[in-house]
Image (cartoon, rainbow, N blue to C red; front, top):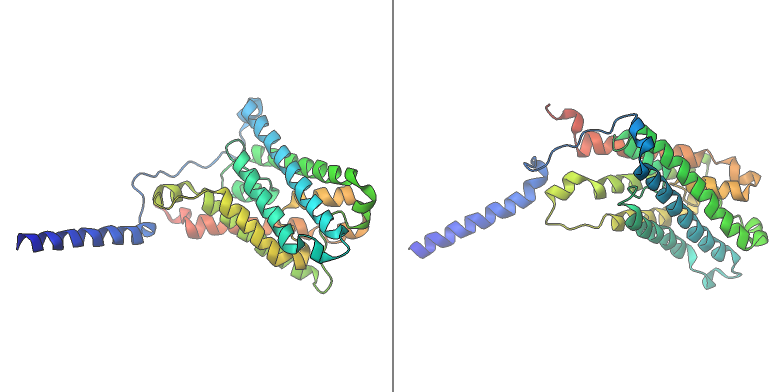
Length: 286
C-alpha cells in the first residue's frame, strides 16, 4: 500500500514538473530583474576605449561581410552558365553564413550588429544609447564602402559590367513591392535578434541551450532566399549603401531609398512587437 502511495506521489511530482515547463513562459521569473534602459546620451562613453574598440569591431565586421558577400555575387554574375555557380542558394548561404560567423566573433565586443537597422531597432528598445547607435551606424557604413571597394579593386571591369552587387528592384515588381519585402525581411531579422539575445529568455529557458549567432545567421539566409528575386535583398542599409557608392551608376540609386526606409521601418516594428507584445514592458506594474 505504501508503495502505491509513493508511486502516486512521484507521478504527481513529475506532472507538476512537466506543467511547470509548459507554463513557465506565462509566469514571471523570480531570479530575473529587468535591466534599466540605456540612457539617451552617455557622454562618458566618448572617453572609454571600449566604446571605440566596439566601433572598430563593427567596421571590420561589416568590411568582411561586404567583401565575402559581394565577391560571391560577382562570381555568380561572372559565370556564363548559372548551373556552374553557387546559385541563389549559395548567395543566401554566403550572407547568412557570414552573419553567423561575424556575430559569433564580435558579439562580446560590440554586440555584433553589422547592420544599421539592427542597431536602430536595439536603440528604439533602449538597449544602447543614441551616442553608441550613431557611432555604430557610421562605422558600419564606412566598413561596407571599404569592403565593396576592395572587391571592385580585384576586377574593375567585371564589377562595373555585372552590377557591382548593388541592390535594385527586379523587373516585374513595383517600388511598393520592394518596400514591403524589405520591411518584412528586416522584421524577421530584427525579431530574431531580439529573441536570440533576450536575457530573460536565457534565464527562463535555461533547459533550451541556444547559440545566438546561429538563428540570426539562419534568419538572414532564409530572408535572402525569399527576397533575392524581389529586391536582391537589402535588409541592411550599410550593405546597400556600400555597394551603391562603389558601383555608382544611376539605376543603383533610383530605388535606393527603399533600402533605407524598408529596413528602418521593419526594425521599428520588430522593436515595438518585442517590447509591447513579447515582453509587455509597458504593462508591467512598477
